[in-house]
Image (cartoon, rainbow, N blue to C red; front, side, top):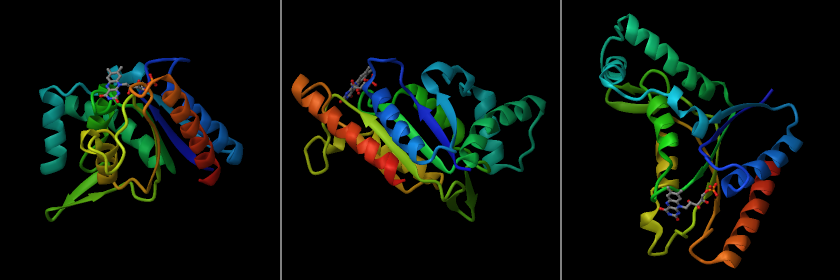
Length: 212
Ligand SMILES: Cc1cc2nc3c(=O)[nH]c(=O)nc-3n(C[C@H](O)[C@H](O)[C@H](O)COP(=O)(O)O)c2cc1C
């Protein structure tokens, strides 16, 4: 049975265009793969269950990355809690990330999840000076919205620290290949352009759901 990790950083409810993309993708994907088990991670709701990165967390990370893995009781409990998030990634056959652009990048709730799951021994390893991702064989769907437009080859391309960053950091853990649906411009080009862009992206999300 296929397991899909459905990760979304979407504070708005029915007004959210990102949520509409996510709904369109899953409606289509689940129609084709009705046996799928979906693990939902609602980051706008559950972000405070993720590590906040105080000194204990940083020390634990470094011990597991560079040290022998000797943890005291408190550190072991924290590592254990953190590994439940990475277990979800290991369990998945497909990872779907639904996110708006926030200040040219990603919402901090999604960054907090990334800071939790990018961990030596759990999702990547450092072997003789080389990094190796441990999550290979898991494609990623990126469902992305933004008010501006940052198309390849345009002067705005270099302002996009959202999609290239997600490709890089998720790819660092071995995830991929990437399938992307980018709805843009959803604001700065006016209401008509926004509706057209959203309609095109919804159709693409539906198509992608059928093709995977
Ligand atoms: C805090 C915040 C920061 C944003 N920063 C950007 C930005 O840098 N560039 C951009 O194109 N849109 C930006 N937007 C617009 C959102 O990316 C866009 O409206 C998105 O569709 C919102 O998603 P939603 O409809 O799912 O709520 C920002 C929105 C918010 C709330």
